[in-house]
Image (cartoon, rainbow, N blue to C red):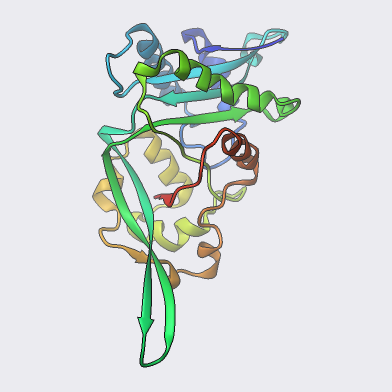
Length: 256
């Protein structure tokens, strides 16, 4: 039997094992015992002390396999709801903005798009941390795990903003190479993508310190980088379909 419930303090070993099954790019589920312990503690506080209005609360749920023989194998999936993005730790992204250009002399009409840095201090609620052990990706289990978050939000709407977004994992290969990061991020942050992904899970302050300050024209990026903008990781495609079926629509935001 499978059931979804709030995470418990005793789930740490199982959550560490689950995180070890994830590949690069799942920032909110780092394979780091100390960071995961902090996330569990934050979730426990959020459930124990409900806020009067959306703040920094994070509600972490897990999928439990009640038939598992060993306790560290009981947790087979995770999903979280973040009450509000921004505040003490802002939300960082690129906003794709398109401009129409026209030359009457040359009779040319074209459009150019730019990745404009965005820092959001008063953001929406967000869902994330959706991960399912590969052996359990069957019979709509992922859909069950994902939609349970909306049931919780429907029961306690006062905990959340009216707008909800979902950050989807982008294109990263098995070696941790990201074409978009290689084209932009590494020139500003001077670390590879796996290292940047880990650092952002610890503390996002370095993003504000080193991120680009001006728009970056997409036409100047290599083809490999432009080709992955707006695309999700193959393992994330099922999660994207679930959200689109629930009414979510793609935005022009791209993770830094």
